[in-house]
Amino acid sequence: MGELRNCPSCGKVFVKINRNLCPACIDKEEQDFEEVRKFLKEYPGASVPEISQVTGVDEDKILKWIREGRIDASYRVAAAVTCRRCGASISLGNLCSRCAQELASQIKSISRSRPVAQEPEEPKESKFSGMFVADRLRDKD
Ligand SMILES: [Zn+2]
Ligand SMILES: [Zn+2]
Image 1 (cartoon, protein in one colour):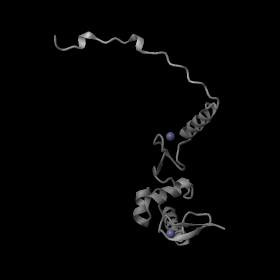
Image 2 (cartoon, rainbow, N blue to C red):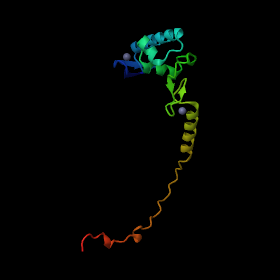
Image 3 (cartoon, rainbow, N blue to C red):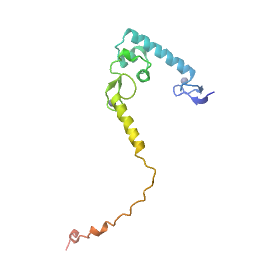
Image 4 (cartoon, rainbow, N blue to C red):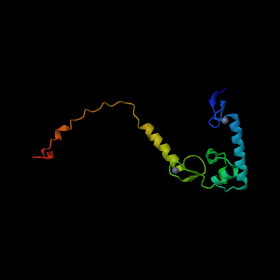
């Protein structure tokens, strides 16, 4: 079972099973991943730009693997991933734990403070009572 879709990487039509890439691109990605992994075994402290330069793999891809936790965080890829909210460096994911907590509590309070009951709009008092036409706006006599 699966649905037909275009591979976002090469544009070919393929049957989506569980990955959003066609089999050829998955293979390619696995090869890239292997390269990165091998490189990091030898140079555990390498930064993402360094890894990218040596292996020829896109920095975006490497960052994605770090975010997904596929590249072991113990490699301590130097300041590779930062919190999308506050910029703190983190080892994986999109947010630091503090921002993740804050967001979670914000989401909770939003869903709580949305009453479905409809309040009738209050009729607004006329605000025109305090307005006067100013005679002094006249320029000329
Ligand atoms: Zn593809
Ligand atoms: Zn943060």
